[in-house]
Length: 576
Image 1: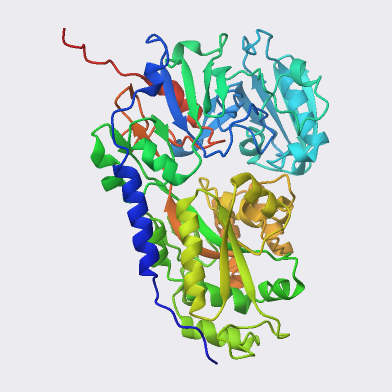
Image 2: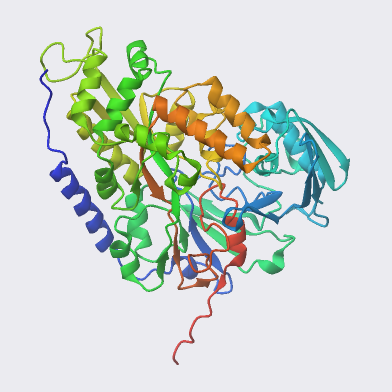
């Protein structure tokens, strides 16, 4: 059959992309001192960029997907932070101890005494009881799946709470501590918890006072009664509005930001070389994948996505190293596992299974074409494009978050690579909130997403393939809507597995099941983006000081440990 032929890489597209980025960076390099110049010299301000936002709003509701990215941890301190770089060592915050029942059917938390909310009211078990009760009563607030495990909550005394579980779970503490703890005395007056924006937040974290909020950003300053104020050596966080990756790159080159976590192309050349104070660390991360919507609105497209031959054909059409070289500027590694499991967990995988499905992860457009012919996806009218089995034209869209330049470029390259097998794909960019909403309501065809990682492969498999998480109030990771009862059963078994051997066997079977069905198309294992400026602050976590994860991203719990470790750098005296 005739199929449109194309050059593997659109050189014009690549040249334009490189030129625009270089012009943007080189046209804006000059000393920058906004944070210091606009505030009294006695105020120490740390400028952070955890996330891009198209608009700055006074939304500090920790249950809202639209909340500002400095809400979690900095305003609402967690019970415990499990330190992923220290073998999940518990770093106790609002809690001082936890204890699992011997039968794994319950867990108690002892709470820290003497903690106050930022308005001076005492923190107690009432607040913890209230917070978890809300999550159980209103599923739209339960983004971490608390209701899947918790049967009931009991306040044992002013500083102890107990959770009775629906089923045994040795790892339930890792999930429970992710729920934000809010002040009962403030929130009990709220009518609509999901819609409440919480413009004047009351929290237990180190930075609770919102100041100077406007369309360009805001200051988030010290909690006057923070329980660990002696550890805090920074007065305020500054969050500036950053809308896109190009916007970010132009401004970080000026030295405007202190702590960030975004993609920078050719980071040595376009960032680190500008100043000895511009530092970075890129720890390995989990994969970036192409998702199919198994509930796509068009029944013909939905039927196509449900064919494993189609999903494998798409996988074999993609040149993964090329995606890394162009979209990620070499920062990444091609995915080897058809399940999407990170290569850092290779010891958990059966090498025979890995090799069995590796051909479907390798570039082979001719075999991809044969698979498409096999399922009657052919060019029925001779125009060079494949048509649906019923004869209707096949035209797909792929959605990515606006401003995520590596994802946007990946989508553009995928659309060009798909031309080789005669499939038309149009990239579409959407605001991040809109992107999440479309995935949450199955209102898309193809999408690109990254995935969270944990100390074992379980977090990836659970967040990505547990059908329970295919409800609108959960994160985007499982919104392909593929369901498999055996996968769900294995995921339920992992938390109660008694031996390491049992846990490894569960992961091996999960890896085999997902790889066999090619549920998603894993593209590449990326890195965790982390940049820091040493000109004004010291104490940074890095490769030589790996105290905890250094990420500034929203809901990265260890960022609380990081901010408390930072201190102003003594500046050299100015010559008289």
